[in-house]
Length: 435
Image (cartoon, rainbow, N blue to C red; front, side, top):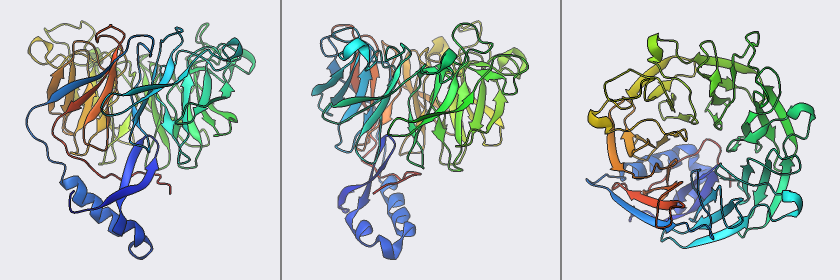
């Protein structure tokens, strides 16, 4: 990397990307081909070294936030941004933190009249090409069903949309983490709302919202056996595939009542790709809570909370799985949790772990007791035993992994941590780059 001069280049979604100055200045002549060649060179320099170093950067003390339950993202400025579910006024906040651990609170929720800004954000924020951050809260707002908000890097917050604005919460409530689509709009799911056959909480929705706050419900889930989608309660966010469609999971429903994997077009045409517990004793997994990630091979990877092969180490209903699925719906179980002696690999986290594919090509994630890596072929290696379950990871441009724990630390209000496994700084491409 020392032989290449790097500068701020392109960004999309939640990850930083860089282009060498020579490539950017000559892009009109070389086009994508030249940039791709340099990316391959840079990725090849991300060499792992043995051993891991775990560092606690922040110990939340409630006055600066508490109980973070979402992943972090790296902003254009190199700082890490996240949310806490609790805080000084018991309503959560948005914060930023440097890689050395200097934390700044950007906004404390429920500080506007009648909690119009919402409270209790469980989800991560996403940064748009404009530099603005977007996120959701799970409660309060104008109708006590959560909000969509935008916030600057300096902490100026505006509420864009309050859920349950429509009769019977047809527009949903309790929204997931947003994803920035290639069309510049934000897409997400709601775990509840749309009161049709799912009890008092509703079945959930898939929605699109513009960055000015105009929301469109693309699909309404239904828990009735007569409903064509056969899934409901999508707890995780979406991922946009390279084919332009969005992919996601429902925690419940499906042919076997244990959750589904679906794809949906930007215009709202939904197809169920897989219903879990299709195999005896739910050997293929059950109840997916986390979001999917598309690997470099084009397949999607994810985890389930329960199911998988039964074993003598516990988890009478299975300890969860890691799986991959093709865009056509062919599912392969890569790993059954708690298959190691004394459950050294842990069990799938109750927070619904998301996987990320790192610069070395392997996937990294968290279980109830460990931070692990798993190859695309399914070889899992526990990396670090966490006394408090870690939330989802993000790999920053320095090659290190950063994350949060909802509990633990000096004050037992949670932490921000860094895990170094020896991967160097990297360059990556994105599906939807912007100047």
